[in-house]
Structure formats: structure tokens, C-alpha cells
Image 1 (tube, rainbow, N blue to C red):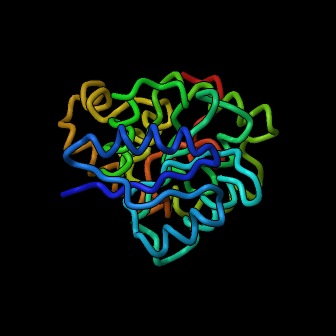
Image 2: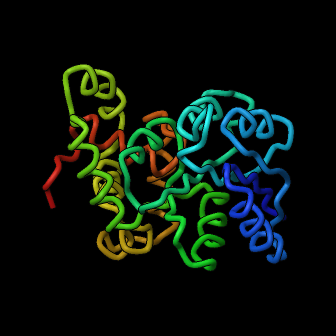
Length: 227
């Protein structure tokens, strides 16, 4: 199966470089290019990509607004957005994850990392390394994030529906641990971990793993600074 990719960046030179990279892979192809967020949304609806590489900072409709629109569109539930940032974590990363992005990638990443990111997103996983997750939470707190009564009330009933093991797995996911590591820590198979993650997403209404991290912190299930 070929992974269909939409490139959204206002810099034509970067889009050209990304296109050459993506099209060089036998299992993926660039199906469209957008120079701003509004065009990205339009092309997401017409080209039906599996993954959108979305620059956060673009003139007019930026990547954040475009991601929010794509994520809210019932017809685009299968489209995954990976945010492209100047730094791995910047002031917009938390908002982008809340808007529905599956993760983020620095523009200075190695080509192999970008290709791997596309495959990870297409598979429905999230691009959140332990280091990136720590930075994400630090930024989340700096922006005044954290559990409040509204957030806790919003997720309390859904969290109550999780089994003990699902909550345990969710805490580890929020810590940035991949399934293989969680499997080792809990002495279960990676497939079992994946099942718990998928069930947690369904119960909490999360699009993907990235959204689980945000929910874990916004609900107060996981406290910043806790191991």
C-alpha cells in the first residue's frame, strides 16, 4: 500500500526538497502541495492524503488553524497531520496536538527520520519520543496548562471507564514510552500493549497516541514532574 502525502509549506524550495525525498521511496508518494493552511485543507479534502506534513508558521491560514479544521472534519478522520517545526518543541506544539496533530518533527531532522515519521503517522502512531514529551509538558505548563475543574470533569467519567491496566498503560504512554518499552516494563507482549492503547483511545475519544498524552495531563491522571 502506498502512503499518500500532502506537503504544506509556504517555502517552495523546501516543498521541492521534501517531494524529491518522499517520491524516492517505493512505498509513498506526494499527491499534492499547499503553500498555506487554507489550501492544505482544500487539498486534504480533494486529494485524500494519508499524511499531511504541515508547517506551523504560514501566511494567511497557518498550520495550527488548518490542522484544527482537518481534525474536526468527519470526512477526514483517516488523515494524520505531522507538524513541521523549526525546533522540536516550540510555542505552538501544545496547541497543535490539541488541534489534532499526530506529532511533530523538526525541519532539521535527518531524511531517514522524516520518512520514518511519515510511516509512523500513517500507521496511526504518534511522534512523541520521551525527550520530546518532556519538552511538550514543560511547554504545556509554561502556557498555563494543567488540570482544572473543567478538564477533570470532562474526562472523569471516561477515565472511570478505563481498566486498571489501561490506566497504567496510559501513564506510561504519557511518559513518552513506546509500546515495546511498555511491554518490557509490564512484562506483556507489545500486541497486548497496543490493544490497551487502542481501547483507551476509544474510551477517551482520542484520535491517536498524541491526543492520549494531552488528555492524560489535562485530566490530572498524570502530574507534571511525577515519575
